[in-house]
Length: 102
Image (tube, rainbow, N blue to C red; front, top):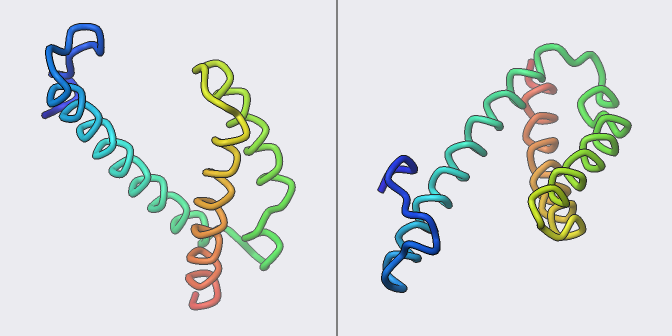
């Protein structure tokens, strides 16, 4: 199911409709994370040190912004922060490996 064909939750007629929509959303989220990772890898070419790869100040400001976005969407900002910390730490380690191999 493509995202263009998703039914609104209130228009789903069954649990199967709900699950199909959730699966389509999760697939789209994972595809977007894959695209995000491509940008992370590309960013390594512009980095000049391990500190610039890890970018602790950028990480803190990015996490704060994601928390605001979570609040705007009615989500728990602490949960979104933990999710991003895990995701970004993984991407940083992968970016660090790529940076060292340049």
